[in-house]
Structure formats: C-alpha cells, structure tokens
Amino acid sequence: MFARHPLRPLTRAAAALMLLAAVAGLNGCRKPESGEVRAVVIADRLPKLVDPLKGDLSPAELLLAGNVAQGLVRFDASGDIAPGLAERWAVSDDGLSYVFRLRSASWSDGRKVRARDVVTLMERQLARRRRDVLFDTLGAVREVVAMTDRVIAVELSAPRPHLLQLLAQPQFALVRGKGGTGPFNAATEGDHLLLTRTLPGFDGDEAQEERVRLGAAAAPQAIQMFVRGDTELVLGGTVSDFPLTVGVSLPRGSLRVDPVVGLFGLVPARSEGLAADPAVRALLDEAIDRTAMVAALGVPGLQPRLSLLQPGVDGFNQYAQPAWAALSIEQRRPAMVERARALFQIPAAPEGSEEPPAEVPRPTIKIAVPGGPGGAIILQRLAADWSPLGLEVTDAADGPADFRFIDEVAPSTSPAWFLRRFRCDYVPVCSEEADQLLDAARLTGFPPQRSRFFADAERIMRDAVLFMPVAAPVRWSLAGRDVDGFAENHFARHTLTDLRSRNGARN
Image 1 (cartoon, rainbow, N blue to C red):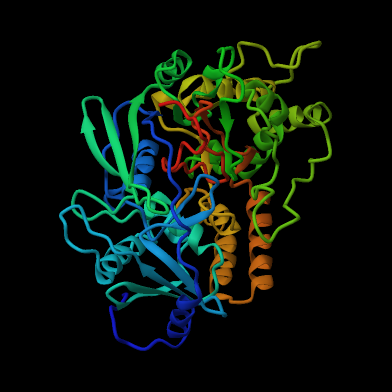
Image 2: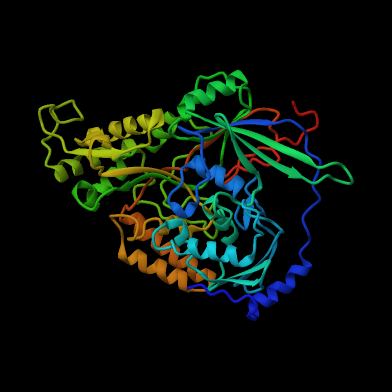
C-alpha cells in the first residue's frame, strides 16, 4: 500500500525537495505562429478520452490521452522529457527519490489539482503492476507521498534512471472525471475534435491560442486526404498499413519513420501443440529469411535482427545470438530440411524437388498477424520460408493461433521491459529460470550486477526461443512542410503542441 503523509519528513525526499530551489523555471514561452493545424489519426473512429485505468487503450485513444490528460511529465516532439502537470522536479543523489512540484492547475470540473488527488490516481496505476507489463516495469517504486498540496515524492527501492520515460507514457495520463489537465482542452465539433490551449504572451505580447483540428480515418483515406491537402499531418501508422504508402506520390520528405526500439517478431501463443516444442521453435526461428522479409516490407532504414534485445537499449553492447547467426539462409536450409523431416515425420522429397509430394499431409502452423497489407506480406514471407520444411502456414483468423506476430514499441530505453515482456505472468511459454533472474535484477541496487542478470536472462530466453525477433517495430507518419514542429522520436509518442514553429507558416 502507498501511504499519504503530506507532512511526514522523508530523509531522501526532503533532501531532493531542497534541490527544487536550484532547478531553473520553465523557459519563457515564445510567440507561436497563428493557424489551425489539421491532423488525422489512423483509426476506425474518432477517439474519446478514456481513463487508462479502465483498460487497454487504442493507439488513437493514447494519442488523445497524452495531449489532454498529461501525467507528471510528458514527451516533447523529439521524445525528450518535458514538464507536464509537474512544472519541475529534482532527483536525490542516490537516485532513490524523485520530487515533483505541481504547477497550478484545475480539473475539468474546476476543482483545484492537489497533490493528494494525484497520489490517489498514481496508486491506482501502480496497482496494475501484476496485470500489465508496462506497469510491471515500475516495480522499484516503493511509495508515492503527497508532501504538500503541490509537492509529490516518489520513493524507489533501487535507482531507476528511466523512471521519467515511463511516467511520460500516455498510459500514465492523469484522468479525473471526464477530463485531465492538458496541455490541450478538447471539444467535439462534428466529425473532428478541436484541441485548444492558451499560451501566455512573450515579453508583453498578447496571449495566443494554439488550435489543432483532429480527425480520424482509415489508413487509405488518411493518405489520400494528405495527398489532396485536406490534412497536414497523419499519425498512427504501423506495419499493417505502411505498404499503402508505397507507390503513392507523396511530397518529398513527408513520410516520417520513427527510429523506435521494441519487439517485432513472433511469440508462442499457446502452451500446447507445435509452439510448445522448443525444437520446433528453434527450427522455425532459424528458417526465417529476415533479410527477405525486411525487403518485402520496404520500410526505409529497417534492418534484420536476431537478438531479443535491440541495439540501442541502455547498458548493453553485446546481445545473445543463435549459433547459426554467421551462416546464410542458403547455407542453413539443407540441414533444416532434414531436421524438419525427422521432427514432423515427413517422407523425403522427390528427386529434384525441395518439397515433399503434394499428397503428403502437412502439419499446419497458424499465425495471428497484423491486419492490412503489411500483415499479408508477413504471412506470405513466413509461408515461403517454412513451406520447404513441409509445413502449411495459415492465418489464425479462423481459430486459435500457434504463434502471434507482435509489433510493440518499448516505453523506455531500459532492457527491463523487453525481458519482462516474456515473464510467465504474461506469456504461455516461458522460463522460470529467466524469471528468477529478473526478480534478482529488480532487487539489486548495483547497476553492473543488474546488467549481468539481464544478460543471463536474455541468453536463456533466446536459447529457449521464447521470441523470434525479425526487426525493429514500424511506426510512421506523414507531415507537411508547414508542420515543422513535428519530429520523429524513439518512442513514437507525438505531442500536438508547437506543431508550427517557422515564421510565415500557412494560416
């Protein structure tokens, strides 16, 4: 349980509180350019503000929540940490206390925001740790305390330098009643949401209103709206719909692919059948032609990947690789075909052919893939890679899946989320030994030892093929030339603030 003790002295938190006096205030607000920004999020309907505590939110709902119900902190356009409900913060020298000073704000019903209200909401968020892998990554949070009406202390059991990246995720948006605390206010106008916020004038200038008109459309329509000039910004693109951008005459430089880290590949979907056999998983993993799949998807900059942890996570420069990593797919294929015949008891192929006779029954692998043309490409490529093994590959739309293709962006640059994503609490096929290492990593306060636990857990998971990595996740947007405040970032979280920043932006 998290206790509320507004006046209780906390040694580390009190020390960090003193640091607040030394933290510089927010930079002065610049005068924004006028002109409403027209934006579209790829979704089947206009998003509504939903409290993340109510359950999993769609990507469009997360976009809205992050822009009208910020948490203590939020991401700026570049993916760096920016003030949210907290106007400034300080961290104790030992990294075990984060102290946040709240800005003066009100909830949507006019009630003044007080620290104890925020603590109550955060306690409810943290209570989800055993049910949600994102919240599980906050396991080092020991308690949240309201020290005064406008000061909150977050106490940790071990240092977590990625805490702010996690708290900036829209899943930690603070919703009370029917609203949040900004940065935007939202009102429905027909088939759009009008997002507005008022910025104080700079150096005696009048206050300015920033406006974003947000609509929703399926990917084909959103792309065409952009091409026609009916919208200046399209958000929410994934691997499912990326192929729709190929062959379309887009303005130069308008297609923006986020350099995200995360998980893009196959995970066993059940603990029985072919997916439960580690020898089958190892064979299927080795047979994936990752270079061909990446080429077929056509995403600029996308690179094949063999490791569970993606290069770019903090604290790692070596990653667990399979023993066959140095061999090409052509070099590996003859031995794989022989292993498949033994595993699946398949008769030898006729002379001059790589595949068994057509009349021989084939074991079937059912895969849940993303929708749209991107998912179709993934399924086609897996079928091409696994068919020589004597397997039939089908979409799992008509029944239980053996494997599920996931495309998930990491919420921070810590390795913890990658590995905890495959804990026994969350997946049907797991390693208890790896779970024990992750538990040990959570308890240690010594960073080198924590990295060692993570490295050992990754090796065990990779050897057991709990995940078949293919590449990095795919997130894309379309941005017009006048929306020059937009930027790609490592988290694919896009603020709608300050989208115009150049003099002479079109009205």
